Image (cartoon, rainbow, N blue to C red; front, side):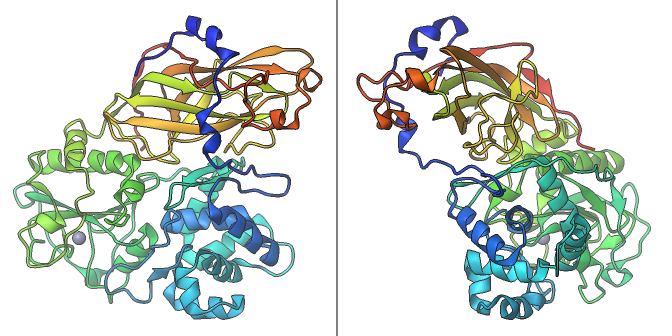
Length: 510
Ligand SMILES: [Zn+2]
């Protein structure tokens, strides 16, 4: 795949073949009063439950994303029945029956049926009368702890562009909110019943063991604080943003690996080994590698796979297999060797879009770009942003297209490892014009932490006013490009003028 240079695009921009993307289901936009859009069947269910219960659809979507990444496989750390989370929205098992009764659904449906899970969760989150943001914050803390309330608030502030298990989108527009205090690495002590006090130092610690929680971050932290757990880890790393808490001092012996604890440090990672693509995020790899590199330097541990190893590989006496085959060891050890500094880069962009649209008309755009850096791109973290100037509101972000924000068309469609090609599919809506007008909108990639990278890519479309359009009503639809139509789509092009260095070093997250 090669970048098409700017100069070649006009030849094709206005006269082209029908757009193949017409076969894709059109994402629904968040229309007035409707705050969640996207192509997932979950979207209609979220709106139905919101209409019946008064709990905002975007709040339910953000809870489902925070708890299960829209997968509905939340569960508890082994042995922690009280903290088990069930269903699409990760309801605590101990709250399930109460929620199901209040919602008028069966326990079994609340566990396995997405809409029933939404209804049960809404029953727990509903507050009498007109709820304020503070009411919902309190309800979320009761539902899933302060960490959930914080994650939901952050997700709503930055907007969501997530994918369900089938790859269909759930989009929540960004909503600027009062800044929440920045998080720092915190020490949250595990229960003293869950580890042995020690005096370990250099020479006593020779391995670092990598785990995953098979549950969510808050569940793991609260479990290690529970004296009944009889387990702990030195550190726990959060999936969405790489946030780290320390729970046991390095000098002490955490109980994370049965009979391989004495000379090791245990690092837990939020997630499920069955779904590495959505839980083992680049943010978590980066943050964990930064931590582990510092530990390796402190204790003189070789930065290689062997001295740094998975629980499932450890010469212990447990039958655990975490973090499973989906943990990218080659990438992780590369990151440990560089102190957690991956590089974000993209190249050879290919842009496909409608060459021409009538004002108000919606068209499909696909941008494909090779990941030429050393960092993976994650769904809902690696997004397109408007460029030239960066972050401006696009005239192509009409009311009928589902963008997380007017400056953010979409995020990468799937987890994209270094060397793979990432796809960014979105819709544009032609603005009002008084005469035929060429609109040239520039985009670049932006990571969740605010780092811009890769080439600048252009989507160019010729927009005509409604009065100049053909009378054939078919021609007004996004898929109308037929022979003789003046608004035929153009299956190709538009291209990438590479501006500035394509390779940018990722900023540290902490
Ligand atoms: Zn483990």
